[in-house]
Image 1: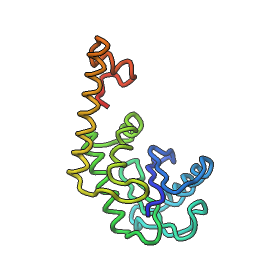
Image 2: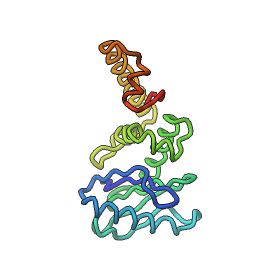
Image 3: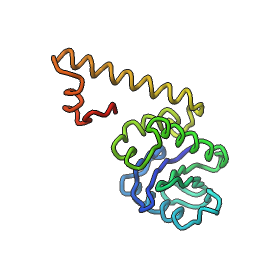
Length: 177
């Protein structure tokens, strides 16, 4: 089971966090700090796998991560999960984000965190892997975009406003998401 997914920048700031095993807010901050300290000091030539103890998650927690540009994509899993399977899952997640944002960067995760969470929820739900087919993941994202656009049009018609003015009112400016 996946216990948590973290995307942390090179300076230790979390850009996306998803905890599937219940821990308090204070403990979440401790987990993020511990995980960051463990992965940041490892050279890129080392393997992307750490087995150790994160007290909040218990013994036997494995940390599997990939470092892309300025971001660490970290999955914390229990002993039953396949290391290579999780590395592949990280790759699928990054590729899906890349296609959604056209070369994903840290700012995309900050300003479009809702879409990044939606992509993640299409892949993992409740600590269990739902989908690994990137085409199906991207189709679900496209469908969500169409529903979002339709709801904006419906709201605009009902209020006698333009879709752009509705977006402005929602604080999303000219961006679709």
